[in-house]
Image (tube, rainbow, N blue to C red):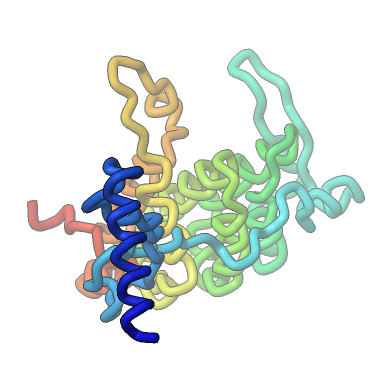
Length: 257
């Protein structure tokens, strides 16, 4: 039985050589195995036929809504003693009360809450109102500083370019108009700086031969973040840089240049 099987196999082998010469010494092709996606910094990332998965981009866990502030509600209800005044130089705020009689513990956090507004006149009232209160009531701002952190944090977490540029300009105005606020603000860096670390390099764009007019209008987010961090370091005292560096590792000191 074994001999007959061997003879039959030899006959088939001879038939294959005579009838199908083009298939001699041809190995069957195997379909390519697709590469596997593996996590970074793992043992699998050093194996063959693998692709390392890139890190996900950091984003706020929950974006704060835009245009739904308590400042809008109080203004429409008539609780804020301001009015729009028109002049040859543009718009300005007409305050109906004296700044010495103004309750900063109530109104200043309310105006900071209006930083999330993007519509006129709420955006103008919030930004210009904060500037007027900072200039005319320098001694009243420092006790109210802890109440301003949550509105600033909410405004930075909106991920809206208009709100971000307005909020960064207000922070610069706060620490430059009242320099004594800089050092007490250091202990709140962990609340307000994480959003800046997210957006620091997110809005950087290679313009080529184009012109970015947002730099002249102070609307470039990356430049505003860099200027804000420098202003915080200049007014924050000796511990400002190490706290900024802890939250934003890519930041370099502007005082050691």
